[in-house]
Structure formats: C-alpha cells, structure tokens
Length: 261
Image (tube, rainbow, N blue to C red; front, side, top):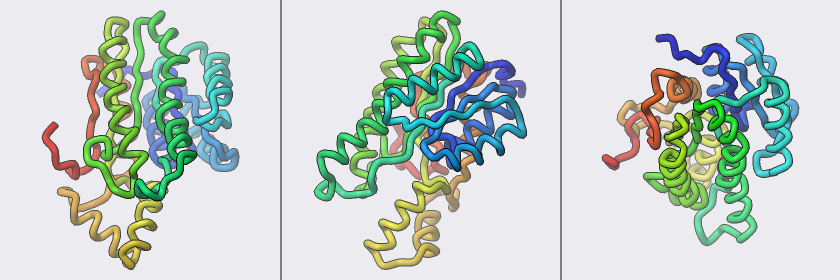
C-alpha cells in the first residue's frame, strides 16, 4: 500500500531510541523528511546515523520539558524543510513510584515532561497545518490511560488526560483536515519496560526472566511488543489512507487491556 507520505515532513520527539526512534525510522522509510530530538547528544547522533541511511533527516538536541528547546527544534525544522506536516509527540515516562512516595516536584516534573510538551509542540505546528489544510498529530501515550498501574501513578493520571486532550483537539481541528490520534502502548521492549521490571523485581524478589515470563503470560498474544510494531502503526496513522481516522486512542498492546471501550 502506498501511504502517500513521500515529501511530507515529520517531527518525532524523544527519538534517539525506543518508540520514538522506531516511529522516525518507519516514517523516513516511507519517504518522509524527518526531524528528531532528544536530550542526550551521543544517543541522538547514533540515531541520526542509523536513520539517515534511509532518507533525509535532521536532529536537534532538545529536552521536551523545556519550552525554549522545543521552540528551537521547531524553528530549525521549519528552516530546513519549510513546513511540518506530521507531529509525533513522545517522552520518557515519569518516575516509577506509588502515590505516597511521590513529591510535589515529581508531580510538577511529570506535568512538564508528559503533558506540557504535547501542548506546546501542538501549538507550534498547528498554524502551519491549518494554512496547508492538512496535518497529522499523533501522541504516544500508554495503556495506563485505560488500565492504570500502581507503580505508574503520575503516568496513569496524565495519560488518561492526554486521551481527553486527543479527542478535544480532534473535534476542534477536524474542519482544517487535521487528524489527531493517540497510541496507547502496552508492554513494549524499551528502556521504560526495564524500569518497570526493576520496580517489580525489587518488590517481589523475582528475576528479570521471571518478570518477563509473567508479563508475557498476561498478554493474549503471549509476548511483549517490539518498537517497530508501534512505528508501523504510527506511519499508517500519518498516511493518506488513514485520513478518516481521528480522535482515537488506539491500543497497541497485544490484547492486554481488558476493557471494551
């Protein structure tokens, strides 16, 4: 299937590894010009080299919780490519802690990194999309938006809010031919999954092998997901064939979430 993405420009946040890198890789392979950011310059350069083998890319060091960093990333992307057609928001998760172990500063930091980066980046790119009468906003979130996890208190709170934001943005931007969707990722083999594993290992006194075996046993497909499986779905949501898909919080979890809605 031709996804109709050749010549489109995509910004993918926190894309030096994991889900962000997989999304950037999927988009560049479909012919997108891709702009990525990350905090760590070494891992960012490594991702740049890996992705550049498949197409046109720029990389800009940026902390997604820092407004001036985001503005600089957006400005450099516009200067290089002239436009932004697709935005994939993404960030590392807030601390893996239960409610009574969290400080005010950790809550505030979670809001800045998990919620406000979505708000700020969206505000930057939407005017250009409205002018072009074409755009795709895709927010990477988590299954905890529908099925909270005790150790992910901040994430469970804010990801549910992002699903609400996704729907309201879709309602308001639809007349401009801009679609807005969220991806609710399940247990995907990323650094975040290993952080959750460490918390469970300490709490229950089990090994890594036992944790991953138990996690897989809870998933109907009986395995954890690969980042590329998220990247491929994001590329589809960014595509022309997905032009009538909007306001959706789509689960990529191997069937793990138990609710029907």
